[in-house]
Length: 163
Image (cartoon, rainbow, N blue to C red; front, side):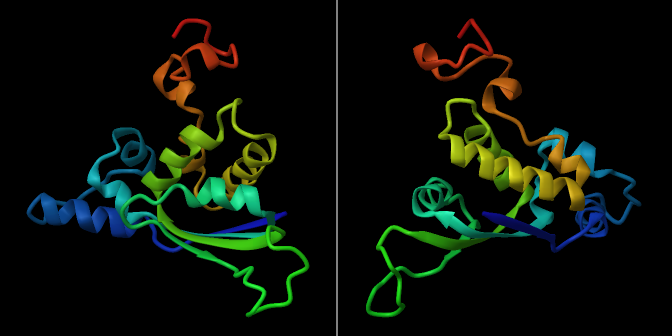
């Protein structure tokens, strides 16, 4: 499995958006503040995520995240179109998403109850995000860490004992 991440936008776009809402007052907001506050400016930060040779099951785990604006591009396994040894083999999976999509995705896919390969793949994505946007990488965390409690009820991994 291999993951590549490209950040498509920058802080200038977020500041432009902020200045539009503030009637052209100069914005000095930083990415960490944007990610912490989860203000609408978070949607200005766009990413291209490429995952190569991932098992079909992991592709499905990421494909279930279909929030408004999150777009998936997956290599076909149709035997009438490509020579694929097995129907549910490995696929390439691309995502075009914003920072909020990645934060939401991390809440589920960095959970210690997530399937091992899915957790590993999300950590690879987090590592690549760190290279292009360290502020965002620090906001990618399991839901229990974000909430301060486990939302899994009796199915908790034990990281947070009370739920």
